[in-house]
Length: 93
Image 1 (cartoon, helix red, strand yellow):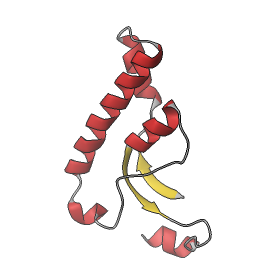
Image 2 (cartoon, helix red, strand yellow):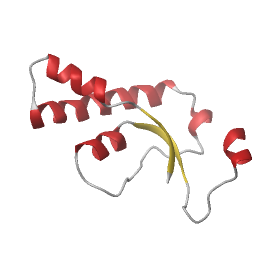
Image 3 (cartoon, helix red, strand yellow):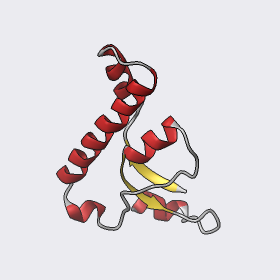
């Protein structure tokens, strides 16, 4: 399970569609644009803010949306479902 600072996907897909792309072409363009913006946002953050976080998430499923959310992850904390942190720990991070 991840607590993720992630980007929304829909606006990137709509932008691709507004440029005349559709289907897989629009989805591929969205993935590429997300990757570029994700890297830009990561680079803009001070390293100390994200040093204890991971930039790679694996949602464990396939398809456009899971891939887009994996690519759009700026930074996240990974947690085991069997060892979730307390609410106090989550609110104080």
